[in-house]
Image 1: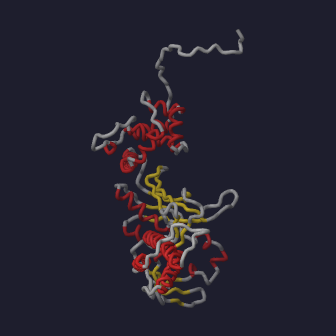
Image 2 (image 1 turned 180 degrees about the vertical axis):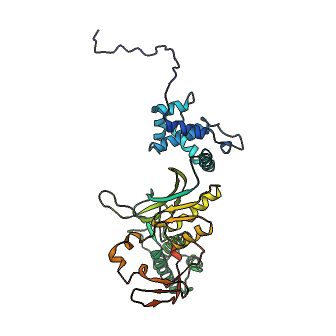
Image 3 (image 1 turned 90 degrees about the vertical axis):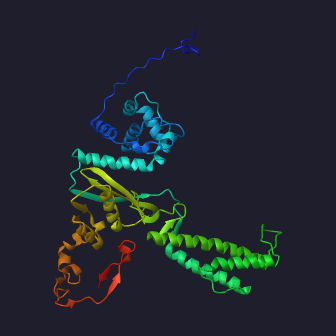
Length: 406
């Protein structure tokens, strides 16, 4: 028999021996397992006993998912592969069956509130054991790109201009048939409906085909144009309303929650506007205690919602620290009203320390302020008083009216 040919016989009987895997945890894996095993998972229990039960206890599933995230694995399919190959995951699973990627994805999607409650419990548990001192919280953020298309941007100013042009085109067509000529957002749809009713009354059919051999009359062309304008103004009004409600100037057609932002340059210095989200994190003693996704391009209006979030969850702190991206008057006022110390770097701190700027009489930072007279005096001895006020709506939260003195 040739030694190079393997003697293969299918259908052989074999004895399945269960051999224990004596793996060892590292320190942070032990801490992770101990932390999430001690929490309350009652929110994961279904009120109605329908469908299959969980193939894995929620505490083990949470440990495995967080361990995968800590190792840079975020896809449900990749998490499944990690569970099959990683010894730590095998030790956490024990004798339980490895969940497939659809089970992992379904667990994450169907338990948003329960997972948020577990994360809140983990923060409070860390505070109980002394890992969080409750003194100073640090905030910083970054921008992450959305999965929206690159060239699907919609701008507020362009929508407002195009909406006015669409109204004028509808007015011109309607006036040629003796209908209401003045078209606005309130009566645009009624004018279009009246035009379509007029076409039907005249016995004109809406064109269902076009091209060679399908001649369209002027009425049919106008009707088709009206239908196109109707769709345009519907989109424009929807986009304008959504952008104004959220205080934005742009959105993406394929992801209307994303805002176009200037992303950081990559290694090829490619910096351009992309649909993205502003992700914010609150950190204390090296632990992320809260996170949030915002539509704002800047960090000004993200501080107050983040701090209100942790206060609602029962987390207390004494002071707040952030970089110059959070340096606006409203944030200082909020921290002062809530009795928190503010450690926020001024926006022009580095510039004001330069010698040439210290001697520049035109800079506001070199003016002397007289609190009694409420005046600023420049280095030349000229006093300036407040002459007018104007709203600073872009730096303030929705619904608040702040005034800046000039």
